[in-house]
Length: 126
Image 1 (cartoon, rainbow, N blue to C red):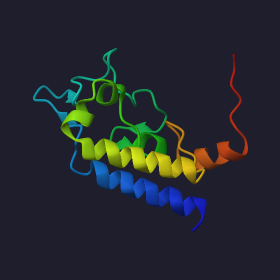
Image 2 (image 1 turned 120 degrees about the vertical axis):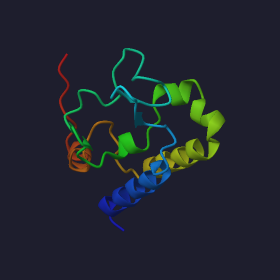
Image 3 (image 1 turned 90 degrees about the vertical axis):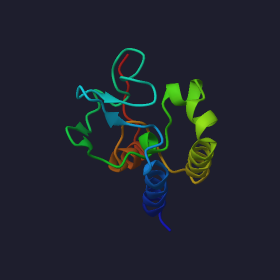
Image 4 (image 1 turned 180 degrees about the vertical axis):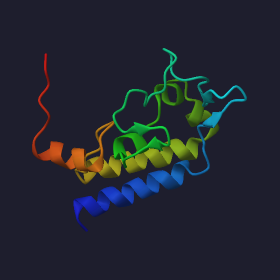
């Protein structure tokens, strides 16, 4: 199985984990999107706000780093750990599998960007 196929398989597993919406992402009566944390992150924005891949319909790419990530509220406050330990355990196992197989999972990066950056990391500006 190629790394690309493994990436796809891990992403699909991540989708299965979140299909029952354990983070309770929903649109409130006033139209604002909410989750377990409330109305966005600590600074009032979504974790994906400002991402180049975010569209009005949601994420436009398959970002493994985002799919297998738990927000700081879910992780630090241990909300999912306490209420849905099965979810956190599955995410942990999938992240470790990706790391062990050297599958790239940069946050806010498409599959293509992940594999391109593996070969040539992006240059950071000071």
